[in-house]
Length: 157
Image (cartoon, rainbow, N blue to C red):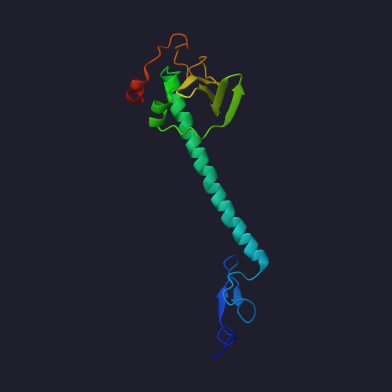
């Protein structure tokens, strides 16, 4: 068997369309029948990985929102960063950030908060339900809520 004769009668199938690839000419290890099939296959692979990345980011944002929402509902508007991190909050994922004077204001969807190097302050919702500040009409105004120490957070959640 010399060079060029071992692949003359062999064939494979295109990864994109499934058509037969004859190996009479070109590379003997081709995986696609045409450049168009090759491009479509690679674009679909990238789209799948992009969708997976989008789902991961949305999941982290939803988790962050749920943590802040639970804190807000039980009346906690300030918490230290360590405690918030222990609850599973990921500080790398927010939906917006604004620098207002010396204040850093972050949002996770409708919930906003201010951040200092050691604490998260003023956890509030921009969208409120039937009762202002509560989100579900619990009947407790934000002025009447008692602030709880951060050590009590994990027991209440």
